[in-house]
Image (cartoon, rainbow, N blue to C red; front, side, top):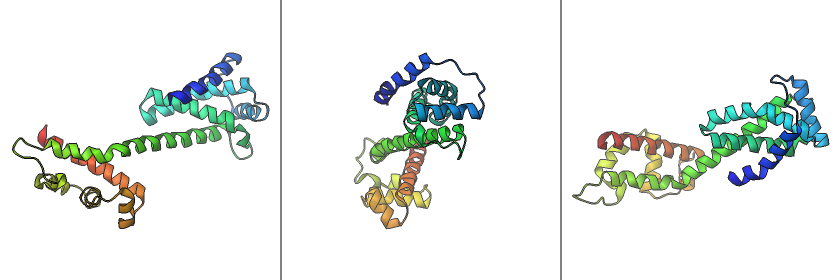
Length: 210
């Protein structure tokens, strides 16, 4: 998020200027002492050392997770901002500083992935109509979209559980929440099956109409 990144960049840049570059390899005891200094003394130099040491590791994780350098940098900024804010929650007796900070990082990455999925789900109901339109010839317009026999043939290629979800959402016009209750499965499972079904429909239709 650009606004979050702008808001947090001042903290990371200002503390970095005050710090001495930490060695490439730092033992766990030193990392813990820096984190404790941040928690107890709000020590910006210690925070900057943590920031420098963890930056390449978090950026590397973010690039693999999102395949997007902007989001990797957002993960870094969000993680280290939370480290600064929540350092007082760290308990050296319960684990290493690396474990605690990587847990913060993973939690934020999960939140970011959920937001990405949520944004995809906002448009998922619109994606199937272009699939029907892609098959539309000059000879006729489809009546009732998915009721067309050709598209029904593509639906029959789907696994039964995915076809069931597509049928409920697009034939019966049920909401995903209603379908979740009707099928007695978690809402997340409905969403996942619907995404997979749409992907496979695109592949089937694309193979025939490319």
